[in-house]
Length: 438
Image (cartoon, rainbow, N blue to C red):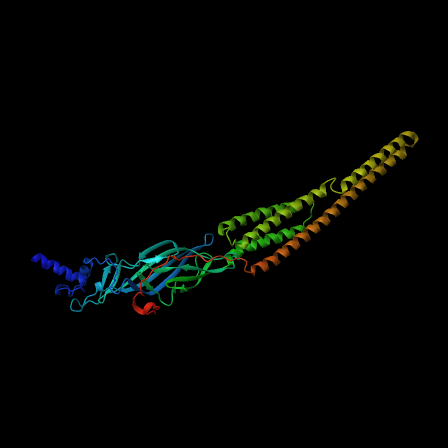
């Protein structure tokens, strides 16, 4: 008989609101210990298999953005409230309006991060506040890393959006429905790097009411990229054009052009560390650096060739002409020597003839050198005009390309489109309407 009464008492306690004796009336800890002893770890299901959780406030902060991998790390604080009738008590039981319970001793809703590649969830505090009507106030911190669909084609003058999908668990006709607030509180603005968080909005899929997400709009502060990448490349190209003013003879111009090429390779390493190459929308800056490097190398090679032509004895069209002149000079010298041998009496005249021939040879060499220098100067001016024309044409093409939408990427799919079969319409408060901030 005693055993039956004990079972009945236990059944009454577990199936009805908490009814305590007077010895817990003035003790908050006694009331909390009694609720913890019930070990309520299952979700409330008094109104059906769907359970509604209200997000009272939502704080978002972007921690970092990896430009090379297009990954964003963010911190989200979510303040939630729900009602669990198994946790309520009456005024006759206790005068306490609210009590504090350990967060791991009662049921708390689990959140689904649909597009997260890495996520960490932890409670904001180790305790929760429970009201006498069963209302629970709880807060969690989410550390989330997601992939972003941002086009870097016109880097560093770009902006884009990232999706952070936070929803309740749902399977068939059961699950948790989150009621989002109308706005999101954004913490921080500029990141430690070049990216800035412009705004954060709550959006949803057009055909799915319960699939909502945070739409984070990011933009780049282009100052760092312009100073470290674009401006140095433009100055190096300008220095290469100015180097044509140096004389072709000697090695000053060649030394400068080799230095420019070696300096430019350093900025290539910086670019590769900062931006990813390849993919559907390779940043235009990669093509810019490729053009600059090819242009600098060609300019250096042309300068080396022109320097060689100024010092070469025979090249191109002057090769046959010089040989012909040399043969004529040798024949004239032989004839002069033969004539001077026959005229033994005219030794003074022969010596004078040799001096004349020597001066003529010197004059011919000077004429050949002058003709070589004139030809090289003509080629040098032609090369300068050619590279100047190429650079101007390149600037025009870049201006046109950056104003046209040549790069389009497909939207990243973050949802699981497995069909869900629901019997009837779920019953939950507010009929799924959006929650208004308190």
